[in-house]
Structures are given as C-alpha cells and as structure tokens.
Figure 1 (cartoon, one colour):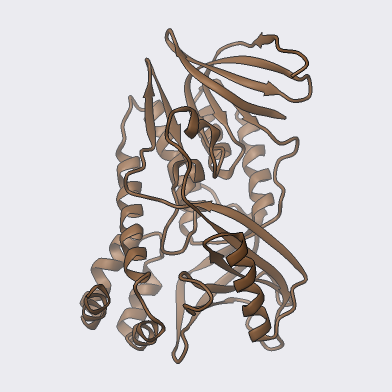
Figure 2 (cartoon, one colour; figure 1 turned 90 degrees about the vertical axis):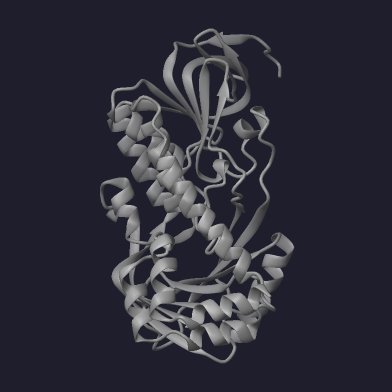
Length: 382
C-alpha cells in the first residue's frame, strides 16, 4: 500500500465483518439492544449480485418480522420427481421466494435505523487480542490506509473463505457451487409450485425449478465445483428443453459437526455466523434461515451473559441435516424411486405441518407414519 500508516478510530462494543444477511441481522439486533455496533464490508455497494432464494416460513419467526419487501413469490406446493416416481406435497404454510439483494437492503436499512454504522470499502486484514478487547486491522480502500478498530467482541460474517475465520486459525471451509439459470416458465406451469428432481447423474444433491412469477423462474443445481455445476446444469437444461436467459452463481460453505461457532481470543470472543460459520443445512444446501439463526444466537450470547442456548439448538439441527445428507449421498436413483413411492397421505400430512427447518420433528414423526422409511435407510447404509 502507498500509505502504510494506521489510523485509529473510537472503540465499539461489537464489530461485524461482512454485510451478509447474517452480518446485517446481527448488527440490527445488537444495535437495537443498545450496543455500539460498526459493520465493515469490503465491497463499495450493498447487495449485488442478484440471486433468487427460497426459504420456509421460519424466516418470519427468526427475523421477528416479515421481509415482504424482498418477497417475489409464494410457494404452495412442492413436486418431487425421481427417475420413475412423482409425489406432490402441499405446504401448510407457504414457502417464500426472495431476491437476495432486496433482503440485504432491507436488513441494512433496519440496522442503520437502530444506530448501527455500516462502512463500505473496508477489507479485513488482521486481528489480535489486546487488553480488554480486540484490535482489528482494516484496509480503507478509498483512502488506501490501514485503520485500527477496537472492539469488545467481533462477529465474522464474511462468507465462504472467511478472512476472520482464517485469522482465528479456523482454516477454510469445504465448499460446493450453486449454479442456476433464469428461464421462461413453460406454458401451463403453476407459478406457486416448486419442482425438485433427484437425478444422481446430474448431482448428488438435486435440481430445482423455483418460479419467480407466472412467466419467469430459476433452474439450478449444486455441484462439487464450478465446472461440475455448470456442466450439470447445461445438460439438465438441454434435456428438459429450457433456454437460459441469464445465470446466477454462488459458492456455499459446507457444514461439519466439528465446526465451532465461537473462539476465545484473550479476554474477548469471536463469533462466526452464516457461511463464515458453516451454518448450512446439508440436506438442501440452504443457509439463509440457518445463518439468521446464527446471528440471533450470537446476539443472545453477547447480550445475555454469554448464554449459548440458541447456538446449541442450531447445532443440533445442523448435525441432523449433516447425518441425513450422509445417508442421502448413499442413495441410488432406484432408492429415490422407492422413497417417493413411500410418500403416503400420513407422511404428506407431516410434511405439511413441519418445514425443512424442523428436521428434528420430521425425523421423529415420519418413521411413525411410514415405518418402511427405516428399512429404506437401513438398506442404503448397508
């Protein structure tokens, strides 16, 4: 850097690195509770790039309000398709289709209203423990200087490849790639139905069609890396007669039970939330609601004398998703055929009442309604 001087700023109760949905929500919660909060984001603009997301009704419960400004569509049913089977599950409460950029702008506005300061164009450089707190080094890209920021607590919400996580010796995450294409919806397609395909030749996860409106939607899949995701999506689009209008992409961190959400550094604590903390549901590779839950758990731990109840609850849920993904990775196409063939009226009723953000309840209730699910799981494990 041309100017290697360090400029000190006033101390903060909490510093947040990364204007992700999780980082902005944590800043909002803590500022509302009276903490002095400063959030730093390396980009000069909040929000981009655009990406269509689908979340369950749980987002309203976690946020404490409805993010209606970011909602572009509501989903009333999910159609599940394997090679030779089909099952349709009507949702008791609609899923929400969100535009990521709008959600970020919404959360940023709420954080600022509560008094949180958001500083753009600041890249995280380093971190060390000092007396009664933490010292962060941040590169102010506009002035080309390194600024020292003091804080009592740090929240790392800087996504996949988190620099904060690496600074506290957590290392980088394993990750996968999401690749999705905006497409014209086929004539006669229900704009309130999501379609999910289980095709092992395309991906070990699944492919999806999420309607944004009556005329447009996004088709996507998860690949082990960018090359696999792009190739798999291209083949899927060709096989189903879709033409891509534009593409959206993202790296996603993978959760592992060994990951810790907090690290002690001297007298202070560093929290990792969202993708930075690997808070991803491994069954669906969805991280919006899980990351927001991580943000709320961090805010609770900071404000409520260090309680970790919400972190423990979230970790239990993510551990179940991890175990379920380990099982699903063993499934063949014929296993998915068998699975959809076991979806009866009782299991549909349970799937209507419990969302994918309540996996613990689902795993308890579904085998009682359809005991042959346990036989399928056992056969796959063997």
